[in-house]
Length: 438
Image (cartoon, rainbow, N blue to C red):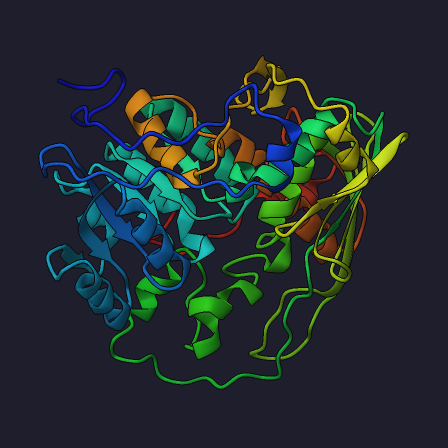
């Protein structure tokens, strides 16, 4: 028996724990939420999971997915990482260097992607076209045009894609968004976001790639350059060739939450940053700041120094939220004046012409669990492609403005810069032959 709109057999998945609509505000303010433990089930009932990219966060994703299915295949261009991952799952999964071998396997129903950013879009596109549902680490794209392509592919294939912007599943951030959208701060005026500083470096050493790493395959669509150890693994994020620094790292989390609450898209961006001029060194901007104006008049300031988190300011109060706390007078007032537990208008952005639609904010507390629930139900997950494309586009706009060194005007409907040929060239990047994203 097959699921509607799905190419994989119907299976019973662990249900995501839900928050009752009648819970008191005290629950939101302090309770620790735990998901239901995975239940044992026969191999015929469990979904087959293939994991691509298994260093750092990729291994975390694989571990979380293992609660819902069987890890049947692992892939990494670093043989040491690949072998360690294979051993972590009982030495039984199929192991490969090229992800195309993994997504073409019939025993793989679901794919997790924990690779560097420049591979995300192509792997999601190829996996969807191969009939797989996908959980991909954030940020979902390297360029804005990649997001447009992803939106089309997900729509055409009907696949479920969850992006790892898991703060949408955290009760503090969800409460902050709901309070703003419910008018508990009055009219929202301004948002301050602190991301943290980008790393700097002196000139780094060019060496020969280690034999256990396929450097050509690691680079993918990006320019073929001599191997520098710091270009790969965790420090890839400090090179524009592969990522976008803190603007797309922490930004893919915090700007996503901020934009979800703002309930609008940017129309103006002005980024300033000092660009390093160190040969063979990290090249993302340092000492950066970006100012945005949204279509509904709200302004947002993104900075690299201060208390990491998001400060929402309205004409009747303000609240601050990060991964450790949510504070402010409006939060304290919830004890006496709780939010009504009812449907509220949320932003998903899955309709370009009418990006704001009414819908229920599901009480999701387990990001991976929400993904597997949606694989079964064929519903849209909380961090869907459209919302995450729109959020990371806002991050990309900041980087583009910084790199061009000037203010830019943005048309959120056409998704292009207004009367600016030079800026519109930055919506995409040149891609190395054989690795094109299309």
